[in-house]
View 1 (cartoon, rainbow, N blue to C red):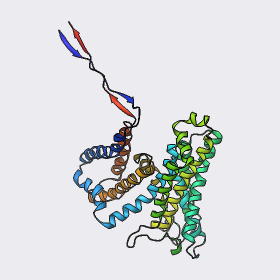
View 2: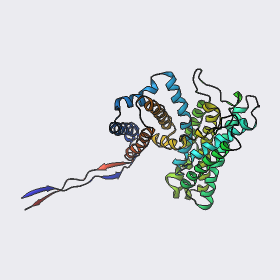
View 3: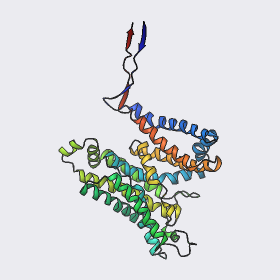
View 4: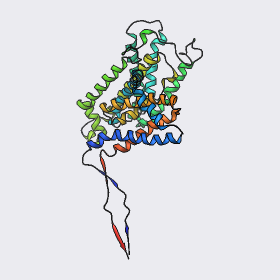
Length: 366
């Protein structure tokens, strides 16, 4: 006679209510899992994993200069992610923030490029306003195609990002190219009044950080306290119920995409009027795509996004440190970012689900 245990796999069972513990533990667990997985990758690459982790996760906090660069990097990530999260919670997936970021930079650059001799403290605020309008205008193209022709907003917004990059190339290789720029694809350097004022003396952190924090606070009030934000969330969670209640799906799509485009365009304007000081092809650094990770890593909650933006900024600055001190390839830094998002998406599945292990069955054979 032999006794063989039956093999059963656990199943995911939906919880009656979301688990608060799983919600709080998902981000740190995701970070720990991603770190462990990438430590193995660094070993396979022949790098010292301790040196890489020290350079990537600790060095950004070891000096005020390094941490100020973290704040500078976190500002556009936070701003774009807050705008995207509003749409994501309404189930409107704007994947084209990179293109909207580029258009914001282009619209903002028009003033110093066309009027290089202009002076006055009105220039940089107007640049930021134009940048926000440019990002919103680019997002409106996606909204139009989604509402009128039911085109997939993921594909449309993503393809428009490629169009935006080509438009940037055209301008910098053609009409907006600096004639005294040694043939580099860049615009003229902006005048002093076209630069966003420095916020913290001795650093590159500028006033756009305050605007970003103000936008984050406004996003929290909008999503948590306003009836409009409530309608967007209901439309995302229960679209049929929202339809019965008279909520307009087309209106929700337009509003979600315009808010995301406005935020991304404002971030693009602050980038050219801030640390760059001119329009360059390098303006397209992947902020719009990284902000998607930031939004989800923050649980699509305005407060959580603040912390996830800081974490992503640390990975950016720490990744640069690791490339220099530990000879780490840039691709490894991007793998860390991607694995962090993947680990978080797996961990967050347990917020509304739990593993149920069936009882072991015992069969007797004679």
